[in-house]
Image (cartoon, rainbow, N blue to C red):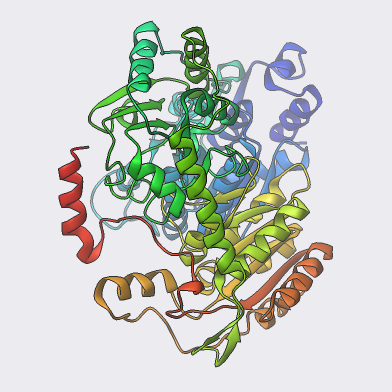
Length: 623
């Protein structure tokens, strides 16, 4: 038995490194390779799940993971593409809250994963990325390094996306792990942490390594910052306002009860961002659905009319607030955020830094002490927003009633996206399935259609709209310790960006479904081009693909045709639910000028030939 195997067995028997040392199963000071020390150190933080692709730049780490997996200390998933690994790890963190690690070789592999890390960065998901790097002896260009006579180029490159540390000096590992732990454990917005492991450092043996020197996981205490003066000022702003709108982002997760209670106390509408559906139940009477550039009729109405805006856990992303033009009548903003830059994003803002739930709870108590209570008689504002939500619901229902429309590309009548997406969404909710929406038109239609009653029913990459995210995200369910059935909703273009799930799902026992809504074009961009310039250009192709046949060519995947009507699609969805593995359902959908073919657009966006007018409006508003 090798020393690595002996240590792994001792750790497995004891449960933790410290317990193994305390029991005498292992000596406190050990001769460890940097690769093994890295795996031990990450496990000391609770990181036990790895996903990626091994290469010549990561063989030392691979061999340690092999041994540690044999003893049940870690689990490793090898996939077909590093970007897929990056997406799956991010989806896993968003779904479970647990931190996984992505691993790659040097060069192209790490560049693929690095590209995918944009999702983790944009959505604030803390994920470790462990990449092989060039050797420290600089004996000449290493195979697959960036070919320039300059040191630390991967360190420089990756530091742009997230927190980065190079293990150029082996004993710096302890500092690297401590910084990583703090980065992963911080409250609020995190992101990827890149650990660059030079190929000659990974097998280097650290003599007398102290097993008790590895940092444990970091847990940040909820910061309570809403003192008496802040609460008094916030309450005074409420007293002097008649039309209040609460706009929530992903940082409001876990605050649904407080947000609903606050809205009742101060007579406010509630509007979500695209990635925060379900925080407040759709059935809540004051919840007005999504607002923003691709927001709903009711959500944008409340944003445009509000004289006081209360923002909770959100960044000022362009589509989230119509590129800064959504607050057309707002006089003041109250902004709850853990990050000062985001809390102070707008002018005329009362920032409330710190943990949103803690501060909201204190403000609610303060309001009650000052005599605020939920009104039994509806106010004029409450009547307005209720009427607007009913109008929005009828707007949606009209589209759901739409019969199949003739499509020029398909040369037949097919379902519209709203009808097809609504069918899948309803089925997913009835089956208790997690929904992953991909980028593009499916995403934009989808977050207007979903009517989630709970958090974590729907996930989508609203930070970077990374095409191909949803199929990869299903891989995260294989990494979970509980049985989760997931449905990925994506367009034909998005699916072909990352179709590796067809193979990896079989290899790793994924049970789920990919629904490909196929209009043979990038319809979101085609529509944008036509809205702005009257013509679409190079956003479609003439190639017909049988995605069901493609899926069926992979033994173990069930390929299904979703048909041109809801009954056929429902039957296919039921077959996929009953299938012990991955299914792919191919659904041809309509693209054209019929207004019932999509959910419409109700906001502004600073792109293309709209820029001048949108920028002029933003500066007029002065936010």
